[in-house]
Length: 370
Ligand SMILES: *Cc1c(COP(=O)(O)O)cnc(C)c1O
Image 1 (tube, rainbow, N blue to C red):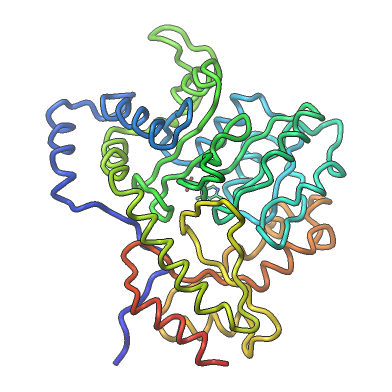
Image 2: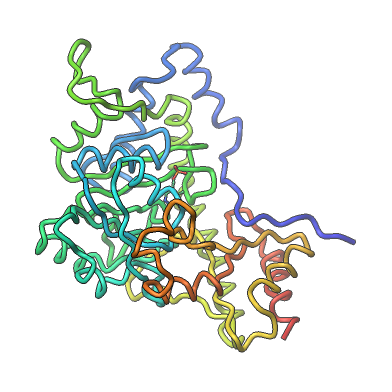
Protein backbone atom coordinates (compact mmCIF):
# COMPACT_ATOMS: atom_id res chain seq x y z
CA UNK A 1 0.00 0.00 0.00
CA UNK A 2 1.50 3.38 -0.96
CA UNK A 3 2.24 5.58 2.01
CA UNK A 4 0.83 9.09 2.12
CA UNK A 5 3.29 11.61 0.70
CA UNK A 6 5.63 13.21 3.19
CA UNK A 7 6.55 16.82 2.65
CA UNK A 8 9.95 18.44 3.05
CA UNK A 9 8.32 21.10 5.16
CA UNK A 10 4.73 22.05 5.92
CA UNK A 11 3.70 25.46 7.18
CA UNK A 12 2.58 25.53 10.77
CA UNK A 13 -0.88 27.07 11.19
CA UNK A 14 -2.84 27.63 14.39
CA UNK A 15 -6.43 26.32 14.67
CA UNK A 16 -8.62 28.24 12.20
CA UNK A 17 -11.19 29.18 14.84
CA UNK A 18 -8.48 31.03 16.75
CA UNK A 19 -7.85 33.25 13.72
CA UNK A 20 -11.49 34.15 13.07
CA UNK A 21 -11.75 36.88 15.76
CA UNK A 22 -8.73 38.62 14.20
CA UNK A 23 -10.40 38.49 10.79
CA UNK A 24 -13.62 39.87 12.23
CA UNK A 25 -11.68 42.81 13.62
CA UNK A 26 -10.04 43.55 10.27
CA UNK A 27 -13.40 43.30 8.48
CA UNK A 28 -14.99 45.57 11.07
CA UNK A 29 -12.32 48.25 11.11
CA UNK A 30 -11.59 48.20 7.37
CA UNK A 31 -7.99 48.92 8.31
CA UNK A 32 -6.28 46.48 5.96
CA UNK A 33 -2.70 47.79 5.84
CA UNK A 34 -0.55 50.94 6.29
CA UNK A 35 0.63 50.29 9.83
CA UNK A 36 -2.74 49.46 11.38
CA UNK A 37 -3.37 48.17 14.90
CA UNK A 38 -2.28 44.57 14.26
CA UNK A 39 0.93 45.81 12.61
CA UNK A 40 1.71 47.89 15.70
CA UNK A 41 0.84 45.07 18.10
CA UNK A 42 2.79 42.43 16.20
CA UNK A 43 5.86 44.64 15.85
CA UNK A 44 5.92 45.18 19.62
CA UNK A 45 5.11 41.55 20.48
CA UNK A 46 7.82 40.28 18.13
CA UNK A 47 10.33 42.74 19.55
CA UNK A 48 9.68 41.35 23.01
CA UNK A 49 9.62 37.71 21.92
CA UNK A 50 12.96 38.06 20.15
CA UNK A 51 14.44 40.31 22.83
CA UNK A 52 15.72 42.89 20.33
CA UNK A 53 15.59 46.70 20.43
CA UNK A 54 13.90 47.53 17.09
CA UNK A 55 11.82 45.60 14.58
CA UNK A 56 10.51 46.78 11.21
CA UNK A 57 7.95 44.48 9.61
CA UNK A 58 7.92 43.75 5.87
CA UNK A 59 5.72 42.05 3.29
CA UNK A 60 8.50 39.47 2.79
CA UNK A 61 12.15 38.86 3.61
CA UNK A 62 13.51 39.77 0.19
CA UNK A 63 12.01 43.27 0.31
CA UNK A 64 13.36 43.60 3.85
CA UNK A 65 16.89 42.77 2.69
CA UNK A 66 16.67 45.05 -0.36
CA UNK A 67 15.50 47.88 1.88
CA UNK A 68 18.19 47.25 4.52
CA UNK A 69 20.89 47.58 1.85
CA UNK A 70 19.38 50.93 0.80
CA UNK A 71 18.98 52.14 4.37
CA UNK A 72 22.67 51.47 5.08
CA UNK A 73 23.66 53.00 1.72
CA UNK A 74 25.55 49.89 0.70
CA UNK A 75 27.17 50.19 -2.75
CA UNK A 76 30.06 48.73 -4.76
CA UNK A 77 30.99 45.20 -3.67
CA UNK A 78 29.58 43.03 -0.90
CA UNK A 79 31.22 39.86 0.40
CA UNK A 80 28.75 37.01 0.68
CA UNK A 81 28.24 33.25 0.54
CA UNK A 82 27.40 31.12 -2.50
CA UNK A 83 25.67 28.59 -0.23
CA UNK A 84 22.30 30.26 0.28
CA UNK A 85 18.92 30.89 -1.26
CA UNK A 86 18.89 33.04 -4.41
CA UNK A 87 17.18 35.95 -2.63
CA UNK A 88 20.34 36.77 -0.64
CA UNK A 89 22.38 37.73 -3.68
CA UNK A 90 19.45 38.81 -5.86
CA UNK A 91 18.89 41.60 -3.30
CA UNK A 92 22.42 42.79 -4.11
CA UNK A 93 21.89 42.79 -7.88
CA UNK A 94 18.58 44.66 -7.47
CA UNK A 95 20.58 47.38 -5.73
CA UNK A 96 23.27 47.46 -8.40
CA UNK A 97 25.77 45.86 -6.00
CA UNK A 98 28.33 43.27 -7.06
CA UNK A 99 28.42 40.11 -4.95
CA UNK A 100 31.89 38.78 -4.12
CA UNK A 101 31.68 35.10 -3.21
CA UNK A 102 33.80 33.67 -0.41
CA UNK A 103 33.87 29.96 0.46
CA UNK A 104 32.10 28.41 3.45
CA UNK A 105 33.17 26.28 6.41
CA UNK A 106 32.28 22.59 6.25
CA UNK A 107 31.24 22.41 9.93
CA UNK A 108 28.56 25.14 9.76
CA UNK A 109 28.00 25.78 6.02
CA UNK A 110 28.54 29.47 6.87
CA UNK A 111 30.86 32.03 5.28
CA UNK A 112 34.45 31.15 6.29
CA UNK A 113 35.54 34.13 8.36
CA UNK A 114 39.22 33.32 7.77
CA UNK A 115 38.83 33.89 4.01
CA UNK A 116 37.02 37.23 4.12
CA UNK A 117 39.91 39.65 4.47
CA UNK A 118 41.60 38.38 1.31
CA UNK A 119 38.44 39.26 -0.66
CA UNK A 120 38.18 42.87 0.56
CA UNK A 121 38.92 45.53 -2.07
CA UNK A 122 38.63 49.35 -1.99
CA UNK A 123 35.10 48.92 -3.38
CA UNK A 124 33.92 46.61 -0.57
CA UNK A 125 31.28 48.27 1.61
CA UNK A 126 29.65 45.40 3.49
CA UNK A 127 29.63 41.73 4.48
CA UNK A 128 26.40 39.76 4.01
CA UNK A 129 26.64 36.43 5.86
CA UNK A 130 23.81 33.89 6.25
CA UNK A 131 23.20 31.88 9.44
CA UNK A 132 22.76 28.83 7.23
CA UNK A 133 20.17 26.31 8.54
CA UNK A 134 20.15 28.47 11.68
CA UNK A 135 23.80 27.64 12.47
CA UNK A 136 25.35 30.71 14.09
CA UNK A 137 28.04 32.56 12.13
CA UNK A 138 31.27 33.52 13.91
CA UNK A 139 29.64 36.82 14.84
CA UNK A 140 32.40 38.30 17.01
CA UNK A 141 35.07 37.70 14.42
CA UNK A 142 32.84 39.04 11.64
CA UNK A 143 32.15 42.21 13.62
CA UNK A 144 35.86 42.63 14.26
CA UNK A 145 36.60 42.40 10.51
CA UNK A 146 33.75 44.81 9.73
CA UNK A 147 35.06 47.31 12.29
CA UNK A 148 38.67 47.02 11.12
CA UNK A 149 37.81 47.68 7.48
CA UNK A 150 34.88 50.05 8.05
CA UNK A 151 32.30 47.71 6.54
CA UNK A 152 28.60 47.29 7.25
CA UNK A 153 27.54 43.89 8.54
CA UNK A 154 24.15 42.67 7.34
CA UNK A 155 22.92 39.25 8.39
CA UNK A 156 20.54 37.19 6.33
CA UNK A 157 18.92 35.55 9.36
CA UNK A 158 16.06 34.02 7.34
CA UNK A 159 16.84 30.62 8.93
CA UNK A 160 17.61 31.90 12.41
CA UNK A 161 14.25 32.67 14.04
CA UNK A 162 14.42 31.68 17.71
CA UNK A 163 18.08 30.59 17.66
CA UNK A 164 20.26 31.77 20.53
CA UNK A 165 23.82 31.27 21.72
CA UNK A 166 24.45 31.32 25.45
CA UNK A 167 21.00 32.85 25.90
CA UNK A 168 21.67 35.64 23.38
CA UNK A 169 19.59 35.88 20.19
CA UNK A 170 21.56 35.67 16.95
CA UNK A 171 19.61 38.75 15.92
CA UNK A 172 21.68 40.91 18.26
CA UNK A 173 24.56 40.85 15.81
CA UNK A 174 25.48 43.13 12.92
CA UNK A 175 24.10 46.49 11.82
CA UNK A 176 20.90 44.72 10.84
CA UNK A 177 19.50 41.21 10.60
CA UNK A 178 16.83 40.18 8.13
CA UNK A 179 14.13 37.63 8.98
CA UNK A 180 11.78 35.82 6.64
CA UNK A 181 8.31 34.66 7.67
CA UNK A 182 7.68 32.79 4.42
CA UNK A 183 5.39 29.76 4.63
CA UNK A 184 8.35 27.38 4.55
CA UNK A 185 10.20 28.99 7.45
CA UNK A 186 10.17 28.11 11.16
CA UNK A 187 7.79 31.02 11.85
CA UNK A 188 5.36 32.13 9.16
CA UNK A 189 2.85 34.90 8.44
CA UNK A 190 1.96 33.26 5.04
CA UNK A 191 4.63 35.59 3.62
CA UNK A 192 6.44 38.20 5.63
CA UNK A 193 9.73 39.46 6.89
CA UNK A 194 11.45 41.88 9.22
CA UNK A 195 14.58 43.91 9.79
CA UNK A 196 16.08 43.91 13.26
CA UNK A 197 18.29 46.88 14.12
CA UNK A 198 19.79 48.54 17.18
CA UNK A 199 19.42 52.21 16.37
CA UNK A 200 16.21 54.24 16.37
CA UNK A 201 17.34 56.55 13.55
CA UNK A 202 18.10 53.56 11.35
CA UNK A 203 14.70 52.02 12.13
CA UNK A 204 13.06 55.30 11.18
CA UNK A 205 14.90 55.37 7.85
CA UNK A 206 13.97 51.74 7.17
CA UNK A 207 10.33 52.54 7.95
CA UNK A 208 10.34 55.51 5.55
CA UNK A 209 11.94 53.42 2.82
CA UNK A 210 9.41 50.59 3.11
CA UNK A 211 6.58 53.12 2.71
CA UNK A 212 7.63 54.82 -0.57
CA UNK A 213 9.88 57.21 1.40
CA UNK A 214 6.98 58.99 3.11
CA UNK A 215 8.09 60.65 6.36
CA UNK A 216 4.64 62.23 6.81
CA UNK A 217 1.60 63.00 4.68
CA UNK A 218 3.38 65.54 2.49
CA UNK A 219 7.09 64.79 2.92
CA UNK A 220 8.90 62.17 0.82
CA UNK A 221 12.52 61.79 1.89
CA UNK A 222 13.75 58.98 -0.39
CA UNK A 223 12.71 56.93 -3.42
CA UNK A 224 11.26 54.20 -1.23
CA UNK A 225 9.48 51.00 -2.13
CA UNK A 226 6.25 49.34 -1.03
CA UNK A 227 7.51 46.81 1.52
CA UNK A 228 4.71 47.06 4.06
CA UNK A 229 3.31 44.09 5.95
CA UNK A 230 -0.50 44.09 5.83
CA UNK A 231 -2.94 43.62 8.72
CA UNK A 232 -3.82 40.05 7.73
CA UNK A 233 -0.16 39.00 7.94
CA UNK A 234 0.40 40.91 11.19
CA UNK A 235 -2.69 39.38 12.83
CA UNK A 236 -1.53 35.89 11.89
CA UNK A 237 1.92 36.76 13.21
CA UNK A 238 0.45 37.77 16.57
CA UNK A 239 -1.38 34.46 16.80
CA UNK A 240 1.61 32.44 15.57
CA UNK A 241 3.80 33.90 18.32
CA UNK A 242 1.68 32.03 20.87
CA UNK A 243 2.65 28.76 19.18
CA UNK A 244 6.23 29.53 18.16
CA UNK A 245 8.08 27.95 21.08
CA UNK A 246 5.95 24.81 20.93
CA UNK A 247 6.45 24.49 17.15
CA UNK A 248 10.22 24.86 17.55
CA UNK A 249 10.29 22.24 20.32
CA UNK A 250 8.47 19.77 18.04
CA UNK A 251 11.03 20.39 15.28
CA UNK A 252 13.96 19.95 17.66
CA UNK A 253 12.57 16.60 18.82
CA UNK A 254 12.61 15.38 15.21
CA UNK A 255 16.12 16.77 14.76
CA UNK A 256 17.33 14.78 17.75
CA UNK A 257 15.65 11.58 16.56
CA UNK A 258 17.41 11.83 13.19
CA UNK A 259 20.74 12.54 14.87
CA UNK A 260 20.54 9.55 17.17
CA UNK A 261 19.64 7.27 14.27
CA UNK A 262 22.44 8.44 11.97
CA UNK A 263 25.18 8.67 14.60
CA UNK A 264 26.51 5.24 13.66
CA UNK A 265 25.76 5.29 9.92
CA UNK A 266 28.89 5.60 7.79
CA UNK A 267 28.56 8.15 5.00
CA UNK A 268 25.55 9.94 6.51
CA UNK A 269 26.93 12.93 8.40
CA UNK A 270 24.89 15.48 10.32
CA UNK A 271 26.09 19.00 11.09
CA UNK A 272 26.85 19.32 14.79
CA UNK A 273 25.11 21.92 16.92
CA UNK A 274 27.81 24.07 18.52
CA UNK A 275 28.17 24.33 22.32
CA UNK A 276 25.61 26.64 23.94
CA UNK A 277 23.39 26.92 20.86
CA UNK A 278 19.62 26.65 21.23
CA UNK A 279 18.58 25.48 17.74
CA UNK A 280 15.24 25.91 15.95
CA UNK A 281 15.04 22.67 13.95
CA UNK A 282 14.44 24.64 10.77
CA UNK A 283 16.21 22.20 8.45
CA UNK A 284 17.75 18.77 8.69
CA UNK A 285 20.62 18.49 6.21
CA UNK A 286 22.71 15.33 5.95
CA UNK A 287 25.91 14.97 3.93
CA UNK A 288 26.03 11.78 1.89
CA UNK A 289 29.63 10.62 1.67
CA UNK A 290 31.58 7.99 -0.26
CA UNK A 291 31.02 5.43 2.55
CA UNK A 292 27.30 5.29 1.80
CA UNK A 293 26.25 2.74 -0.86
CA UNK A 294 24.24 5.29 -2.88
CA UNK A 295 25.29 8.67 -4.20
CA UNK A 296 23.37 11.69 -2.93
CA UNK A 297 21.41 11.85 -6.18
CA UNK A 298 20.59 8.14 -6.10
CA UNK A 299 19.30 8.49 -2.54
CA UNK A 300 17.29 11.54 -3.62
CA UNK A 301 15.64 9.44 -6.36
CA UNK A 302 15.02 6.61 -3.90
CA UNK A 303 13.10 8.99 -1.61
CA UNK A 304 11.14 10.41 -4.52
CA UNK A 305 10.09 6.91 -5.57
CA UNK A 306 8.66 6.45 -2.09
CA UNK A 307 6.84 9.79 -2.11
CA UNK A 308 9.10 11.33 0.51
CA UNK A 309 9.94 14.90 -0.45
CA UNK A 310 13.57 15.59 0.24
CA UNK A 311 15.55 18.43 -1.27
CA UNK A 312 19.10 19.10 -2.42
CA UNK A 313 19.32 22.35 -0.56
CA UNK A 314 21.45 24.27 -1.49
CA UNK A 315 22.07 22.95 -4.96
CA UNK A 316 22.99 24.36 -7.40
CA UNK A 317 25.18 26.96 -5.74
CA UNK A 318 24.06 30.55 -6.32
CA UNK A 319 27.48 31.23 -7.85
CA UNK A 320 26.67 28.75 -10.63
CA UNK A 321 23.47 30.50 -11.73
CA UNK A 322 23.71 32.31 -15.07
CA UNK A 323 23.53 35.82 -13.59
CA UNK A 324 26.45 35.14 -11.22
CA UNK A 325 28.81 32.66 -12.85
CA UNK A 326 30.62 35.35 -14.82
CA UNK A 327 32.03 36.93 -11.66
CA UNK A 328 35.65 35.91 -10.96
CA UNK A 329 34.78 34.98 -7.36
CA UNK A 330 32.11 32.54 -8.61
CA UNK A 331 34.71 30.13 -10.05
CA UNK A 332 34.32 26.68 -8.46
CA UNK A 333 38.09 26.69 -7.76
CA UNK A 334 37.46 29.67 -5.45
CA UNK A 335 34.67 27.80 -3.65
CA UNK A 336 35.87 24.20 -3.12
CA UNK A 337 34.03 23.56 0.17
CA UNK A 338 30.69 24.96 -1.02
CA UNK A 339 31.06 23.05 -4.30
CA UNK A 340 31.68 19.79 -2.45
CA UNK A 341 28.83 20.28 0.05
CA UNK A 342 26.34 21.19 -2.68
CA UNK A 343 27.09 17.78 -4.25
CA UNK A 344 26.59 15.86 -1.00
CA UNK A 345 23.78 17.62 0.85
CA UNK A 346 20.25 16.31 1.22
CA UNK A 347 17.65 17.99 3.44
CA UNK A 348 15.21 15.59 5.12
CA UNK A 349 11.59 16.35 6.06
CA UNK A 350 11.19 18.34 9.27
CA UNK A 351 8.10 20.26 10.42
CA UNK A 352 6.06 20.47 13.63
CA UNK A 353 3.27 18.07 12.68
CA UNK A 354 5.53 15.45 11.10
CA UNK A 355 4.70 12.41 13.24
CA UNK A 356 7.50 10.35 14.72
CA UNK A 357 6.41 7.14 12.97
CA UNK A 358 7.00 8.88 9.66
CA UNK A 359 10.37 10.11 10.88
CA UNK A 360 11.21 6.49 11.72
CA UNK A 361 10.10 5.40 8.25
CA UNK A 362 12.43 7.98 6.70
CA UNK A 363 15.27 6.81 8.94
CA UNK A 364 14.52 3.20 7.96
CA UNK A 365 14.82 4.05 4.26
CA UNK A 366 18.36 5.33 4.86
CA UNK A 367 19.30 2.42 7.14
CA UNK A 368 17.85 -0.31 4.94
CA UNK A 369 20.09 0.60 2.03
CA UNK A 370 23.29 -0.15 3.90
C1 LIG B 1 13.59 32.37 2.49
C2 LIG B 1 14.91 33.04 2.35
C3 LIG B 1 15.02 34.35 1.89
C4 LIG B 1 13.87 35.11 1.29
O1 LIG B 1 12.83 35.36 2.15
P1 LIG B 1 11.35 35.62 1.54
O2 LIG B 1 10.56 35.97 2.76
O3 LIG B 1 10.90 34.34 0.92
O4 LIG B 1 11.43 36.73 0.58
C5 LIG B 1 16.26 34.94 1.88
N1 LIG B 1 17.36 34.28 2.30
C6 LIG B 1 17.29 33.02 2.74
C7 LIG B 1 18.56 32.35 3.20
C8 LIG B 1 16.08 32.34 2.75
O5 LIG B 1 16.04 31.06 3.13
